[in-house]
Length: 300
Ligand SMILES: NC(=O)c1ccc[n+]([C@@H]2O[C@H](COP(=O)([O-])OP(=O)(O)OC[C@H]3O[C@@H](n4cnc5c(N)ncnc54)[C@H](OP(=O)(O)O)[C@@H]3O)[C@@H](O)[C@H]2O)c1
Image (cartoon, rainbow, N blue to C red; front, side):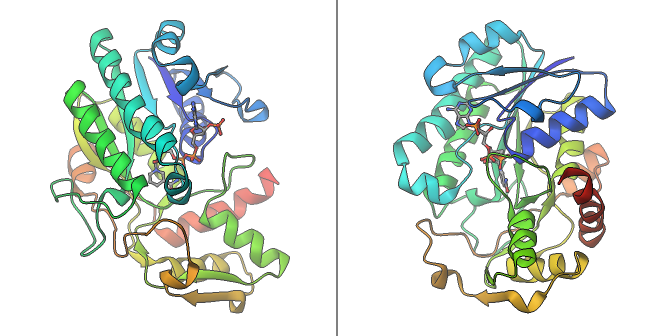
């Protein structure tokens, strides 16, 4: 299968590209708006393409894929709050066009979404729970989900949460990298104690997306880690596994962080649907971090 991955400069798209190249015989085509050089795995093809400037159609004409995994997005809630127009265009409008185009071409579409579509009042959400977002990032992704499933009913929407992994030269760093880098420098690091998530190992997400890619499923699926934990406690676990000084971690309330975007407090995604229908099993959290500690020395 020829698989086009958008957003290949991000943790999700980059890990998926490496996973598919290493574990499957699929023909992998990557795209991103900047050139990603050393992050193009051997055996994959890369094209630099700005979806907002060059559109969706020309990319699909060129790549002629059997499947698209759409990871390109403004993934930072704060960036969305600061640039609402850009956020809506990339996060909501582009997926709509992608859904229309893939439907017309009978191309499989897997669209990435987030736990931020929920308000965070209860947590441990199933695919059937009613979404309601508290920030622009979440509402743009919620609109994208609705657009994708309306214009391509065969499509898949994958919701995930707080993805972590150690790959180098990504579009932005993730919680694992930020904690490890700060503590190694000897800097203190403030972490919210009132935000609860199910942190997701990027390699588990890649294997779950691959299961869906090779299935005939459609609709919404959650792929997330096996532990519901506060971001502060997750940072503490990272410090322990990486043998770093955990006393540099400062637990704070979200309001003390003064971030532009409000965050849903208690999320977490249930993954029984993936487990029962596709045999997905998340790696235990501490075990995933141990793997990342070993891998770290291969990447830096
Ligand atoms: N990371 C998480 O914790 C998390 C959690 C839940 C859901 N998700 C979802 O998973 C998906 C991937 O997230 P991520 O964290 O891997 O993303 P990310 O690090 O924010 O990377 C975003 C990607 O989108 C590309 N992009 C941005 N503007 C573009 C444009 N105009 N045209 C083409 N490409 C453009 C970026 O390319 P350049 O850098 O080259 O510009 C980059 O490759 C997103 O849909 C996100 O909402 C992520």
